[in-house]
Image 1 (cartoon, rainbow, N blue to C red):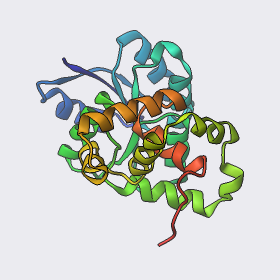
Image 2: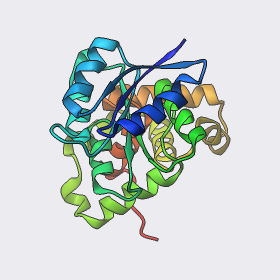
Image 3: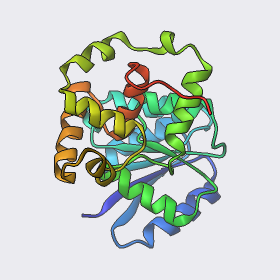
Length: 226
């Protein structure tokens, strides 16, 4: 299946570079380009995008607002947003993950990292921009008042998880892959995937990135300062 990619960035030169890269892959194609968030939301609907590469800072409707709009629209439930940012440590990145983004990448990432992120996001499998995601979320939650950030509704929903699902959620929040979790818990990767999918359904998470955020915001996993 071909992954349909939408490019949202106010810099035409960057969009052109991303288009050449994405269109060079046999399993993906660029289906549209947007210069602001409102246009990105509209094109995501019109073009049936699977993944949106979203610049977080654009004039008018920015990437954060656009991500919220996409995540809140049931007709766009299949769309995954990967945030592109110039800054690896950026408060907006965490806000975007909370708003429903599937992950983030620095604009200075290697081409293979970008292509891999698109595939992972399309499959709903992974986190995102290398292992920095977990540390980034932890740092920003630790900098603020974690108790104030905690979502009581999500904390209550944790009660619907089985003991094994909670164990798996903790491992997901640690940035571990299904294979790594399977080895740690001495079960099969398929069993891990089943637990992850059930946890996502019970917690209302779109993908693994949202599970990480929920694990921290609910207090199941506490940020650790290095």
